[in-house]
Amino acid sequence: MISLPHKPILGFGSKNIQRFSSSISKHFAQMARSALDEMSDSGAFIRTASTFRNFISRDPSSQFPAEVGRYHLYISYACPWASRCLAYLKIKGLDKAISFTSVKPKWERTKETDEHMGWVFSALGTEELGAEPDPLNGAKSIRELYELASTNYAGKYTVPVLWDKKLKTIVNNESSEIIRMFNTEFNDIAENAALDLYPPHLQAQIDETNEWIYNGINNGVYKCGFAKKQGPYEEALKHLYEALDKCEEILGRQRYICGNTLSEADIRLFVTLIRFDEVYVVHFKCNKKLLHEYPNLFNYTKDIFQVPGMSSTVNMQHIKQHYYGSHPSINPFGIIPVGPDIDYSSPHDRERFSS
Ligand SMILES: N[C@@H](CCC(=O)N[C@@H](CS)C(=O)NCC(=O)O)C(=O)O
Image 1 (cartoon, protein in one colour):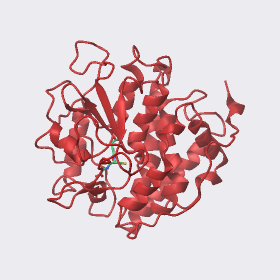
Image 2: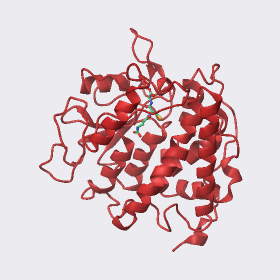
Image 3: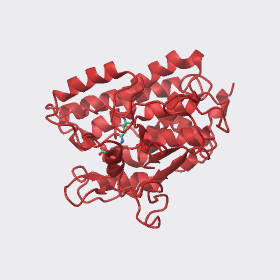
């Protein structure tokens, strides 16, 4: 379903999103302006759905056709959801066709006239290695991009943002959909077009795996970290470690999470695992067991990190500065723990499963 640009729309899967949104709205008097506000009465963290849901298509006559140089990906290196998209850009060989910019790691005031804290661009490109000014719109913040794309947007100002330079609007701000577009729709342009991370014969298995990994792990760590009551925290922690134990067991039998070929499910799992020991263990209280205490999961994380292109998507300084510095309700003094400084480029044992 395609609709006019310049408006936040519910496109693909809109029925599900509407159903989800209406149940969410029972919990919120108004749209959450930050992940830290997404809270139910019971103190559990509940993530709201993304809003811009248009699709880029390989069909040249579509509203958003795949074209070299037309789209721009705004990310934060700190953000696992944005990092999924950057990972696709790198491993599919799309980084010459689709440009990208990372914001500064630590949230700042996005406007002088209110208190909102969020992603801002570097003013000069020299303050933090990796963070740059907005090259397209000269925006000061990600919030400004949402306001350019829609005059009545009232949701969160999240990354990733997939921006259309031609229509000057947001195409899509939902990472799970952006990676699907990058996998298939740019294959006439991609340097690594043959890499299919969502091949037809694995799609059902990938979807099923994504579901429990998202609930238990990707979003599970946030449910632990943003819980405001002991019960929801403990419940999220239980599910998190059940899912990690399940991964450990699967990865004792095969190289990747859906078999012996790299798939979308691996990229989605990796972005959480790489942040686990450095951030989630301390900041989100996911400390029942460390990732490096799981031999298969730890070696698997190194294996994915060493896929050509992947290591350039991991900026541990941005990751640590963001989490420890942007959530004062969790870490009031913004102290960044020094350790454990794990070397993910060290040898791993995963070749033993090579097909
Ligand atoms: N569903 C979105 C989630 C993106 C998301 O939550 N991004 C976070 C950073 S990790 C964000 O930008 N948060 C801004 C805020 O909460 O104000 C996706 O997967 O693309």
